[in-house]
Amino acid sequence: MGQLLSAARERMARAAEKLELAAETVDRLDYPAETLAFSIPLRRDDGSLKQLKGWRCRYNSTLGPTKGGIRFHPSVSEDEVQTLAFLMTMKCALMGLPFGGGKGGVSVDAGDLSLMEKERVARGYVRAAARILSPDRDVPAPDVATGTQEMAWMVDEYGQIAGGIAPHAFTGKPVALGGIEGRTPATGRGGLIALEAVREQLGLEGKDSLTIALQGFGNAGSWFARAASEAGHTIVAVSDSSGMVSNDDGLDVEALVKAKKDGGSVTDYGDGDTSDDGIAIIEAECDVLVLAALGGVIADADDVKKLSCKAIVEIANRPVLPAADEPLREAGIDVVPDILANGGGVTISHAEWVQGRTGLDWDAEEVDDYLEEKMESAAGEVRDLMDEQGLDMRTAAYGVALKRLCAAISATGTADDFAG
Ligand code: GLU
Image 1 (tube, protein in one colour):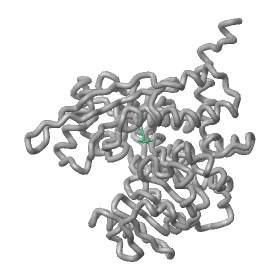
Image 2 (cartoon, rainbow, N blue to C red):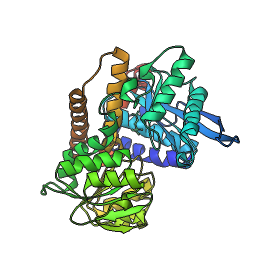
Image 3 (cartoon, protein in one colour):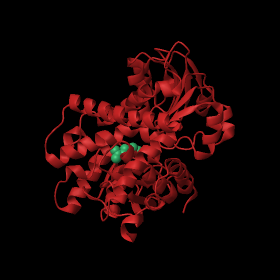
Image 4 (cartoon, protein in one colour):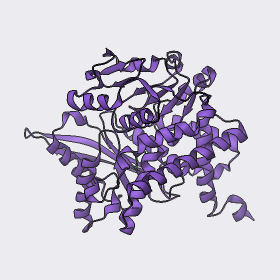
């Protein structure tokens, strides 16, 4: 088993131990159900041929079809895909969705591909993975460097292979192709709902307006920033892969979105201090540090020493690594964990899947209400378990997810049933 997956599973083991869950049910979650590894031949625009490595992992389907995104990034590996599929298993269980966990990826730098090359990769991925995909078995969605455009190509390719249109085979599609209003902002908006719901547990209840530093200004990060500034919070610093911009009086989020669109980076925003050291944002003095870029940003005790925040929100998947858990506890910094903080994305994917399955459209208000209800309810269960058992937020979130998974696993029989 890869190092990333085995480190991630330690968090599950800690929660299982605290909750005294039956070992044989937790053991079922120890290892992925299946992982398909393949190569995707990419004919580049200059005529050359390049082989790309791709994976799709279905980690566990106890609660339903496996669900999770497909990312295009040079750091993608089998270990990372399996770890992210494990996280999706926990996330879908925590959010109370009828889905298991899956994930996919291609090891490629999307920034290095033309639009037509991206289309070839997206369609090539589906051709290679089609044998394990299906609307009732494994349902992909966007992830890092993929979005509505990639899902449009993928669902089209899948329809050609399957011999018919299956809108619920992919989520995160353009609205014109069976997508749902509100899926794109859902991860960011859901992150703010989660943060508000656990403010007391984070020790941030007294202040109306929080100061927020935000790493990553892609889809999830920018929608989180919009929602947070509309709610009256002050965004004091934002970074992306080119650098960082900060202003203690607050940054204008719409102007940041425009700067990023026009110039390619938040550093093109005019009114603030700019630096080309984007990673230094973790040192920003603020109430809440929101991590919405990639995994592994706070990796160990040395990274924790650099922090000047009171709490962390993980909008990306696995930005805080297990080796930083104990140093964070000692520093008194609690973390709203990824499986809760970014659970809004897959929640609205569920609404989109239901829409495709039933043929009945949801309107924007229904989507907003569903997002709020699911985020509030998952956060409430996490709060209750924290209070009951004196747990940190991540352990409690894993605990809620595991209780649901273990109940379903044990419903098919336990050692006691069979021995009796
Ligand atoms: N990639 C997103 C995540 O990590 C969304 C998954 C989905 O909607 O299936 O949660």
